[in-house]
Length: 234
Image 1 (cartoon, rainbow, N blue to C red):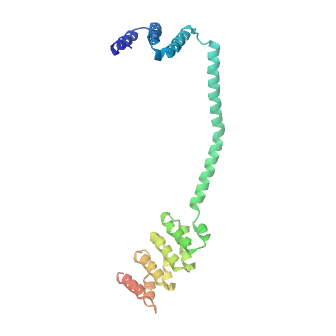
Image 2: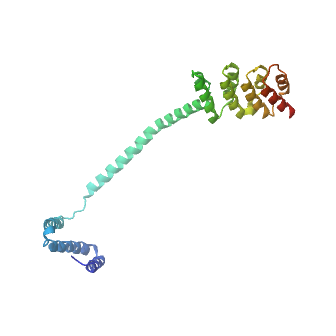
Image 3: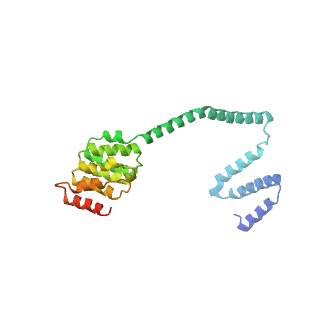
């Protein structure tokens, strides 16, 4: 085997050669290495195959590609590329149409109120969960109006309280009619949820409703105290 120094010298020698000299010297060098390796039993068969391969490579004639073949190859490449471009141009209107349909679909979904989905629910547990999850949504005016009416129609106090807690996030969009619920509501927990919204509201006059509530016979003591507290800071 050659030492590292000998390998370096060989590489240096090849580096300064022109292309033809390099090819010849490299082949001869490898051929010489294979002659040494053939004396080693371990590499005997491999060396024979290598020498035969080198011999075959040396005998292969170098021939330039014929002009007509070269031109045909280029023509096929250009034709294939142009076909792909035409295919893209042909398909593009369908992509545009599909995108337009998707945009319309998502606008429809976004503008649709949540009422229709809510009306499909059968159990109070599902309704409570649905309303609670609406805290993650940005409600439209239609959604708020629906929830205001739902308070009037709903009999379950827990659902009413959950709706009121949700509407407290939209206090500025609640009108005088909404606060009139103070006059007709009787369930203490629902009244307390209503009063929490009233306490944070500054855009609606509700003094008369609070006075009427405070004077109501049989009113829950906690509700009365809350109503009086709000009236005292007016």
